[in-house]
Image (tube, rainbow, N blue to C red; front, side):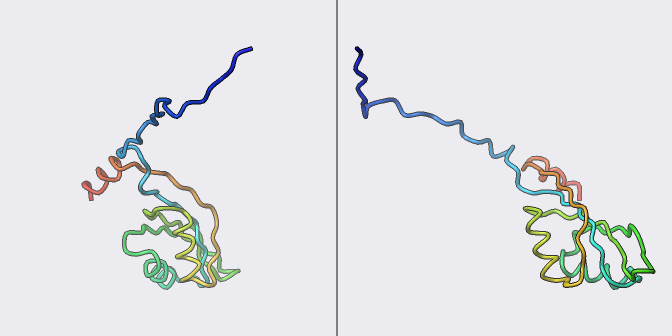
Length: 116
């Protein structure tokens, strides 16, 4: 029978160091948000106040019967949770719909920042 002896002199395991350039730093979050009212001006100003001037807003639907307007919002953020948290805190009567996110790496985010 073979005896296995554990040694504290075993070679340390090396883990691959993550490449900083490929780590996700930001996400492009696209989210549908319905707010009360049928005027896009008040909804737009409330969304921009909550998310900042960097957000892009598009009117998707005006529902006169239910007195609400739906915006599609594109915003750069660290996570979807960050965007939802800001919206929930600022817009008490908003309804959040479809959410999509695209993770961007350092190099892509840097090239986008240079274009703007």
